Image (cartoon, rainbow, N blue to C red; front, top):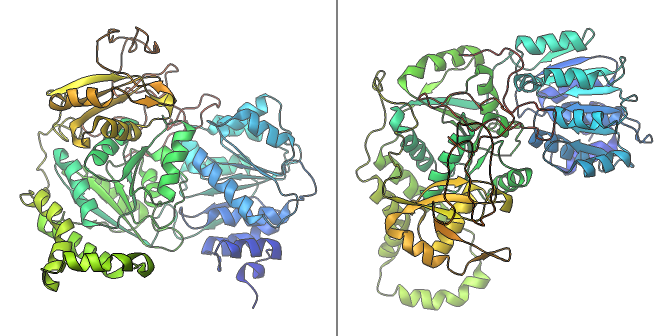
Length: 618
């Protein structure tokens, strides 16, 4: 029987590679766009939601149109983020594995540029790039685009939203005038319409569904809570969905780290993803998430752009995005490739109007949901455990040798008593926690006069905590989650005894409860990391912690000193470069002074999340 991809005009070598990846039938956008793009004679605009298979929609035709006997760049694909760049490049490598002499290079900031230059010099037909790093390589005169026949602008709306308009202009000016431009986007704001007009000649436009609408496979829900209850509401939603595998979106880098740290301390398998992480740290976090070794990924909009992870069950909007179009991209992390998913918004009553705006734009009704009671959570967790026990795979060969001893241990218990005790192992933990759990649902107007979502979220300050210095930091490839685990493991304390963690470059500060401070000192007496002694001191001892334009530690601790104006640190290190704030102000008027780190590091100075074009706000 003829494969459906062959009927679209794809060659056997590519079809076989696609089949090996488990794809049997093309998605609607692939079915509609591949025959058009295979002609290679038209500019093209494709509008479809994330998760609908856009990479194959343009990638498979490219592999048919390119002459792989020629080791020169013939196709350039531009996308907004490192993660999406790597994803596209890996997909194309997988699609072309049966094609002789096929070379695809990923060019993105945060990685070794010399290695990327070597790969380009060795010969390449397809270059996948983020704009900033691509401009760096063009500036070095290290690439020749005179043979480029096809340019693909993927996630075009997000590239414009991130302020890459000028970069795109500069890059495209180095390509031939007679090239064909293919533009793919999830939404079609006026800026994308303008880019199509400037770069294309009578493009064929294909829209899957209605412009700017949401994925039909995604259910949209919202919960109304008081601002101070947001974090508790997040935990209750997670507890009520025992098998959740989701992404939690926050506005700022500071919020992502803060939420992730508190979830880790409370026993959840979570970590943060944001623009301040090094590429190695980001890769480490994403590898854990893809391998499902992490249940919750806490992320900013830009950091999560282009993440294509299978079977994400939930997207939780801890904070609504500043720009309406961003909601479509957020919710598109779930319900991918025909699967179903849930997008949840945790809002206060003042944000109800934003929900109504979203309903009009994506063309879908949001369901107002009620946060479950403590009893509901306990019941859900109990039967989740029962289900797991019932379906667990038994390794008879290994377990049989222990059965006699197990039976002896349970000899004085009836079958019913054994079942009760197994069930109680998990049930008791949730029962204790939720026995006096309050109703977190709020009515419209309940939050009048409250402070914003920050500040009162957990009600924990530094009172009762000892601030400590440690001579390890981000240069040792620690994230705050890693540091938390390191402190707990060596200090022999629980996560709830650790307060704020302030991760710097070559050192860090962290808080522990006064009652366990001496225990932490004792635990770290002989700890080494990568061959050097780990040092713990009370903040201000031996070097004099100093505030001002930077935080300085002297006295032989690495002497890291930051510049960045007299504002000091509020929400993290203020870096030089004067970038824009990520995500603007958070819900309660808290302003993020952490500085912007551009998503495409090592590029032309474009900032993460900056907006070179006017975008639709609430």
